[in-house]
Amino acid sequence: MSRNKLNMGVLFVASIILLFHSPSINSTAFELETAANGEIPFSYIEATGRGPSKWGELDPKWRACGDGRLQSPIDIVDVNVHVFPKLGELQRDYKPANATIMGRGRDIIVQWKGDAGNININGTIYSLQHCHWLTPSEHTFNGTRYDLELHIVHANLLGQITVVGILYQYGKPDSFLSKLLPFIKSVTKQEKDLGIINPRKIVFGSRKYYRYNGSLSVPPCTEGVLWTVIKKVRTVSVEQLQALKDAVDDGFEMNARPIQPFYGRSLYLYNPCEIIGNFA
Image 1 (cartoon, rainbow, N blue to C red):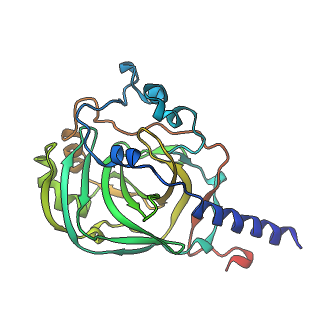
Image 2 (image 1 turned 90 degrees about the horizontal axis):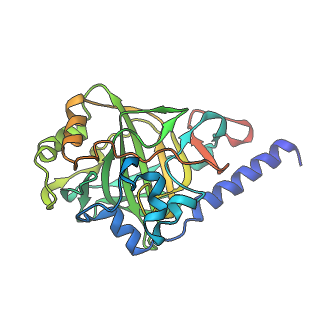
Image 3 (image 1 turned 30 degrees about the horizontal axis):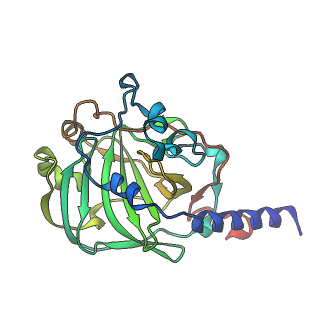
């Protein structure tokens, strides 16, 4: 067997392991990710003594925040990326459904209450749950941090979570945020009905994406979260980003976790335009 064929085989096996080896997220972890918690038990400011470097010490259940080796976010560096067309296009089957908006103190969350559809990753169906925004971006591209990141959270019947991340820089208004802006400006910590919201209005803008195995990016930092980060950086207006910052509690205007160690894990890029050897 040639070295090229052997390398391709290793990549394929590694990809299958990445796609299917995702432990279930327990209910406590998922509730902390999705619900409002009153006084937030952690901070993004190190001077409080409850900042990101201390998260793993604040609660025994949060140990992964300090000693996990599959933590998110990461710096997506070209030299670590394997271009792998066999990942296939991201299959979205979203549909309009009732949704609510609420401030969690640390961020703003839009939750779909009805069946808002799903994404299909290698035959596994993950139902759309909610989305929320972080500023600045949590993930970085080759060390560059952008102005905003949207996380679109999905879960399957086994409780496994997959998140789609979209990064934004200052520019033209984002169309999805434009629709939500009046609600964001008046948001409270009580759920407010948004009526029917079509998640297909969230513009991805590119078929290219990165994929890796990571974690929740807030405590308890549970690992086994499958991440898809869209390669294209989209735009958000100054007004939209300021509204998101104004809607959170004091001290959470900057609510992005710092970059976590990569630890040599697998990182793949789906690029439908790329043809490499026998991958075509």
